[in-house]
Length: 165
Image (cartoon, rainbow, N blue to C red; front, side, top):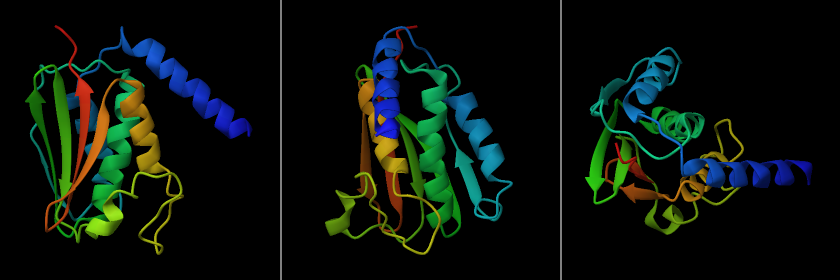
């Protein structure tokens, strides 16, 4: 119960802080990739990062670290050889896109992936809450998480409001 209350308080903080928040995804993702390159899952991968430096999003920098961090960890765990990170702008939003070349997810299971406690890879570490937390962070900041089968691989698109620079 305490953990649930703490998480709800954190979500409320994210919502309140989002209006004034500002974070640049390029340096945050660069630091995350640098760390993941030193892990067993990420060491042998080809990391391709193409993010413009000038883009700012309306989200707290800590939340922008946590959300792509979870997505990048998942991509490193499931990729065969490559992880690509890019960006796409749509009107007043920007999507940070993380794509791996792994096996992807069965279409019937794709919608369930972001549910708390759901894990499709029972052999690995984890609690099945990473994508649920990313969803919470995205929604609290006025955005959303979209998971797309790419055949091969999976793309996670973190859609967030752009900061009006």
